[in-house]
Image (tube, rainbow, N blue to C red; front, side, top):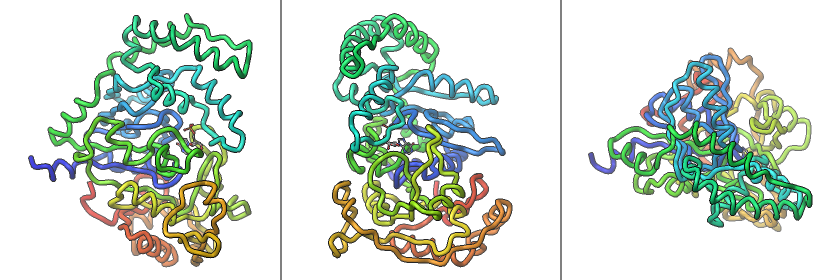
Length: 439
Ligand code: IMP
């Protein structure tokens, strides 16, 4: 098999903004044709909602392809809270789903003290706080980078786990005591609890890098499921108001052990408007009734934390930046139905700083804060019932309201990237696909 053929077999599904773009729906959509679905970064800070046969599944850690009983892999770039993982495995099994899972032996493990530290660090950061999910994500990645993290491999080797925890726990206790002088970490209960997790998860733990490379060499079709969104990425997002991993396609090679040469197509998922949870400047944010209406119609409440999301007009300036970073081949646009009944609707095309248009998204929050978003207005589209939107999806693109088509076509032109998929409802069926044989 030549290399081009290998390349075509893989698909990365990436959020282009601040997460919650609807990636889970497209992972589910494409998973039907995939052999394997892989998560490569983040942890249970993510929240993926998949609607399958009328049933809603919410996952934080397990790749969304699990609903279709696909082979699923949690690769080395992910940080794992074993308790959450076991709960999600149990949920799938309870719903009669076969769990065909591999977990990387080199993925790092989240401990309770990471969660405590996440909260304490957030409170100390004041206006630099990202508004984390407090799932211990940042402190676990910090330990990984400081080279005293504990990996899945260690959980299945009691001696290694004990040796590492004996070094780590006293240090973590001292650090937490800076904030809370009476805080104690009970070594024995953590050791026993995590040994038990190791025992339960052992059947799934392997070195996933050679495993995934073998699958690629065999020509199996792989989906890389991004979590969070590009603008939250640690290296190329709006630091420090983001997460602690590369929440974009750039994170795939280090997060899996797969060479960049072997990656396939990249599909960027964007919402018809903007949403985010947590801190940091959001130039197109709507703090008015229109914002409330979008939040309500788009059900913009965090899957992980239940927090109301901040919403605003779609920002093509930062999406253009994300397209560049990821090397996006095609776009999927979601939640167009959630803008129904709003008139006019606006699209941010670029920013101006001191009256001068900027060439590209300025990335630094301190600069973004001083920028003025520039908008183009469009006529909105009418309210329809979910059933009417579903019917329109079945009939195809030409059945969409003309105002919506104008909105979509402007976005495609401005971003110079083909829109392959349009989503006008939560179910797999509420999708219009404009390109055949995408995957
Ligand atoms: P952390 O990933 O919990 O450390 O949170 C860091 C930032 O990323 C915060 O602003 C969170 O609200 C945001 N974040 C983390 N995960 C998600 C997600 O899945 N969707 C949207 N925002 C997220």
